[in-house]
Amino acid sequence: MKKIKKKNNKIIIRKIKWTNVLLVSFMFLCISLLIISINEGINWYKDSKNIDEQINEIITKSNLTIVSDGINTEIINQANADEFDPYWDYIKMNLINVDFEELINDNSDTVGWIQVNGTNINYPIVQTTNNEYYLTRAFDKSYNDAGWVFMDYRNNAEDFNKNTIIYAHSRLDKTMFGSLKNILRSGWLDDSDNYVIKLSTPYENTLWQVFSVYHLPTTSDYLKVNFTSDSDYNDFLNMISSRTAYNFGTSVNTDDKILTLSTCYANDEKLVVHAKLIKREKR
Image (cartoon, rainbow, N blue to C red; front, side, top):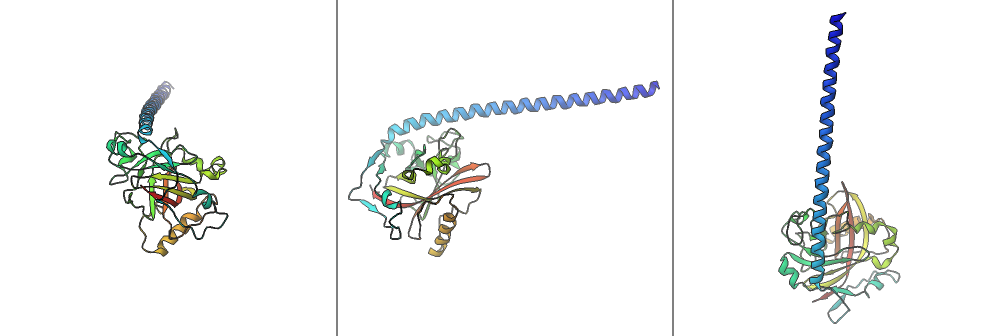
């Protein structure tokens, strides 16, 4: 009997030791995760503060102004737009004009400025030789996980492609493309004056009419820049138009040039906005 008791006591002691090891390991893991989370939170705050400071300085330098139509204004003719198409109201809207001299001196990658009605999006656009650099660089090129708003390296900023693509992170503090999710909410959709995007570049000022918004599992099929034929482009337009979560009453055809905004919606999803060029003015 005594031998059995001793044996049982040893088993119990071993179990207690293993339980303690597991408990200590679990506590260590929790503390490590907490430290990592706190560190990430601090870094996120620092990144956001740095971005806010840059934005305030950039806004001052941009000297953004509203400009009325002039002798160089070109209305993109929409022969297929019926009398109820909001196009007729949008072409009356003013363009924006930005002074790029200081911005380009600060960052030679500057290629434009974007403003989206009904959102916080009001930033200079940069472009480099790849689509990775500005995912982790601010406008001043310092390392920053907030990144910046950038144009696809395959696009021509001087003469827009059939599909010009602009990217940015979807930040929780609503900077970069963080407020783009507003587009899927009734408050944004209820105001048709929001359905336009304004771009200014060193070459021209342009106005774009939104025709499709949606989110979907991460894919690259909407990021196509080059098309082999009008038929190929038409198939592409039909695909992205059919995805829209809201009917904007706006049609597109192969004569149109389009603008695509792309950002994250969730971990494995993208939020996408498409608009077509309806007015431009050479500078």
